[in-house]
Image (cartoon, rainbow, N blue to C red; front, side, top):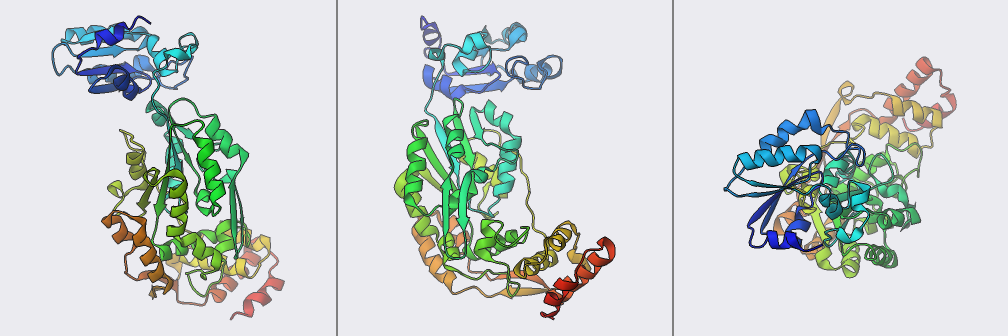
Length: 455
């Protein structure tokens, strides 16, 4: 209240803070410090329910992190009953330790209820919302799971992960009406509520179904609403070479329980003639990055739309989780995960066949649980001819103003190679049906006639 900390820190080069939450950016900004470091301790069990035990488990590790580079280095300590102990260690090593106790909770807005009640004590900084819009099949599931599993790490970095479920994917809050001729996507009220109810600090929300939005009015509504609560709003979008994205989207469609169960199924269909989906009007619009990104840039501003390419050659350490960490400024990167892998060559084609021919639900469910290992079938390597439409996409991609390395990966002209079963997929499907009848007593006779028509 008296401004004594401002006087105390005048002309101070650097400061180290020992506390439960990292607000070093706010402290450095508020007190005009050149450098501010953080040593994290677990939050109070009663007020923050961190699940970690400061004493007797973690405090030796904290002791080892207390290093004095120059005599007289200053430390602010907010560590409960161990605060005095840490101050004593700092003093013995030649530094200056100041135990500020729950004053820190008031600055951070977290901790003791009596200390955080007066919001005037908060050390505020500008708040940034990062909206991750996909695309689909660019490591989104792995990233979302990593974000969900790292909520405590994010909170310590003053970043809130906004989600309503255990997977971290907020696409369930985006209504999507998709078919082979059009897509209509719209964030629901519950999606906006996540943004409105975000705690202090920065925030991240991830929903790849946002990449389906075609109506600029919906994009404007999202921007205007977000700006009510955040000073800056940034859009993060991962791109992928369009033919590979289309192929992967169709592979994802094979995981569905029935035709049209997901946008990927409705858009790509399930024909087994080619691993490449047919280029319908809707699919081409989805793959038209130039038109799509222009809409987001027009509303959010070009500097606030961050484009990356999903390719190990240009991702941070070849990992989408680490790449995303660098974008949002995490000092410690998110955990690398690899989730949502494909069904395998044979099972994917069998599922497409079943869904395309409207197989009975009982048969589809049986195959969903079946282990159809590719190792049990003869496969042949094939090369997929680059579709003519790709040259038009290449031309449009050059207008995205990407870094040359990113553009080189996005417009890579190499043909796509893949593995394909040697035998006809209808023949393999018939074998699966016979096994279903033999082991699970599933009625297959009526549907068998459909399969036999393809032999």
